[in-house]
Length: 322
Image (cartoon, rainbow, N blue to C red):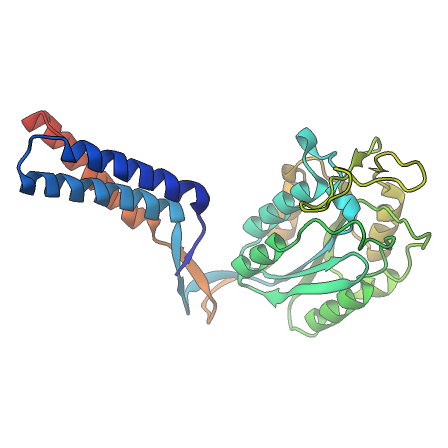
């Protein structure tokens, strides 16, 4: 069983404990018989326990589930250089916030496809090879953290080409598969390199898009927590806060080489039409597959909680007492 708390445990646990202590003290102060106090304490503990478990949002693994399979391999290639933490996405969020929201939307809409994830900064890393376990890919996205500014040595968009080639070639060997690539970046190059090498990958790509994040005005980049320097990345030439700007020319060149669309993303919904087109162009089949499938079980607990509240309501109406 795995959990995915709605409210973090470091908040929910102290609140539950305080409520339990307050309820316990109130019950002890009543002039009830001992057995009545024990029953009241049990009811309170049961209700708070159910609330805590529901908040954990538990789910269990099941295997050999009947699922809807699509004949699509979806490869995410995500720029994780420090410029992707520039704060010029909607409402002052970081570009990476927008990337993760957009990719989660794509994962949801194309469930049943195979997914893979490559991240790159100074080097490329395959965080997830092609898999239908959507949760593992989503978890891989959650491992992407703000890089240390000292680690950044200048960025090139050509870094992930070798890793892309590895995964795209493996996808091309599968029978009756379509390979879709989402190349995600702000297009910024800081080491004077030119965009080169993506044309050789075009033969393996059946669709997708280059997704651009950022703005022409640009945004400042907050440094990783725990770093003792300035709150934002500093421009070494001026000594002031550095500003990263979207470079669409580089991204359009990659899109042209891969023969896919370029899309400037300002909101996760911007990709909806494109993803719907990809989904409509895929073939779908239902089959029993030896895949990991996560089933939520919190609603069973919610039914128990509703029953507890119903009992408390009946007690209040009949005996004027909780």
